Length: 324
Image 1 (cartoon, one colour):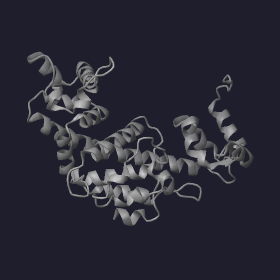
Image 2 (cartoon, helix red, strand yellow; image 1 turned 90 degrees about the horizontal axis):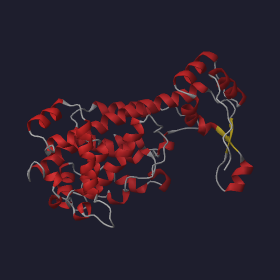
Image 3 (cartoon, helix red, strand yellow; image 1 turned 180 degrees about the horizontal axis):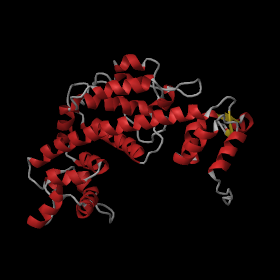
Image 4 (cartoon, one colour; image 1 turned 30 degrees about the vertical axis):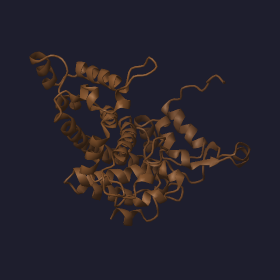
């Protein structure tokens, strides 16, 4: 393992380095971008423009890129891709917020009718979720621990009021308000199958027979949670490769999503399938049609230049027809 020896570079030194590596730029916009966005963050956006080393690629059996960018690469084009990605993340977070709130309501309903504290009772949850093994706590016990930690840290007045008046744990309708999307997703996976399927059916997430498919919805929530975390940490989204992906083999009963099963394997790990899931769920949980229209406008304005395109997100050529 080599020792890291690269020194810190000032903004002006970073600008000079970019010039040596072939980047076209003007001084003012470059200094501003490096000072406000950062060299390291922007490097993820100019990565596709870096020249492929054919000899090294042949030896390694995969594309290996040099540090130099291709002829004519302009920093302003890189910044246009960056801006597209920033706006895409804002739209993604907008949709996930509304979906998360809707899922909270539905989980509250199916558990709350069994009692205010049904989320704490293993008898109301899937056996595998509430069973411990090999000296480790169950996933349910870990989830409850996280819930109580969130409750203890919360500064919300309703949490403080509940603590003063009743003490102890929060009822389900209050408990879910202090949790993040990841913890909500974990609880959904831990619901009994009939409850997951009921919630899925309310959202038209169904199998070929028209029955609610809670397993598919659980998969979607896991995938959307990864997208949410990507956005929350301001990481690159547009051409990211996801390890937890939308399970496209189970979408034959869902109008508008069947075509995902025909995507190339590499495209299934891109953002396009998750974005189509967002579009589908937004039609169920939001009365506002502006979100999809704004998304289509953004996608239509993607700064394609022959090096980068919507295909880097897994989009098929006919994406506009599929979203109409």
